[in-house]
Length: 265
Image (cartoon, rainbow, N blue to C red; front, side, top):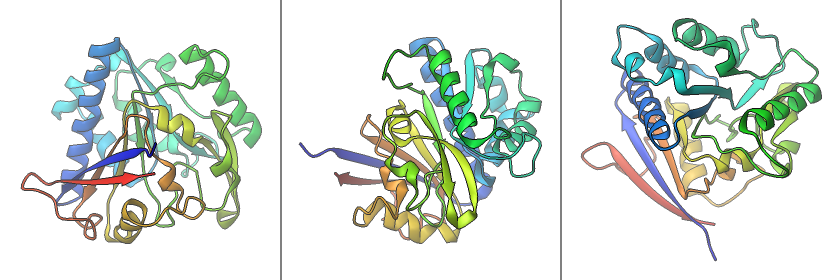
C-alpha cells in the first residue's frame, strides 16, 4: 500500500515573523507533549533560523519563555560537527549561547553530542545516551516529541548529505558520516529515528532555499541526491515553517498563510 504524506507549510513575511512562529511552535508542541505524557523530548538543529527562535524562547521579555515547560523538557541534538563544544562551528555552542545560557534547564536535561571525540566514539556514546535516557530495549527506536530540521541548498538535512553512507544506515540510531564535499565528519541521527518522532518540522528561510524546497517537496524521488526526501514521518504529516522568500516557488497559501501538499511513496 502506498504511503501518503501530508505536507503543511506556514509562510511568514520576514525573518522576525519566522522566528516568532517557530518559537510559538516549539511551545505548542512542548505543551501538547507534556499534557499527553508528562514530559517533552525535543531534538534541535543548528543554523541561523533556529538561533533566532532560540533567542526568543530564552528572552525573559518575550512571552514564550514563561510558557515553555522547562522543568519537563529534555533537549537533544539532531546532529553535530566534529568540533569541541566551544568551537564557533558547534551546534551545541550556538544553542548554548542563544538559549541554554538564558533558560532554566538543569545539566541533566541537556543531552549533547560530544563532537570533540573521535567520530565513531562520539556516535556510539550518543547512541548509548539515547538508549539510556529513553530506556530502549533491543531494536526499539526512540520517539522524540519534536524534531526540528533545516535544509541545505544541496538537499541535505540533519547531517544526511547527498551520496554519503549515512543515507543507507538503517540499524543504528546515530552514525558518524564522512562528508567528502566538506572534507569533514559529522555525527547525526539516522533517518529512521527522525521519522519515528511524533512531530517533525523544517525551518527554512531565504531565496536560496526556494528551488531546493520545490524540488524536494514536489519533484521526483531521488533520495541519494536529495536526502531531505527521506524525511517521511510515521505520523504521515510533515510541517514546514518558511519565510516568503523560501516559499516563493511553492503553491500559493490560503488567507492565513498556510499551504498544503500531498505526496505518495
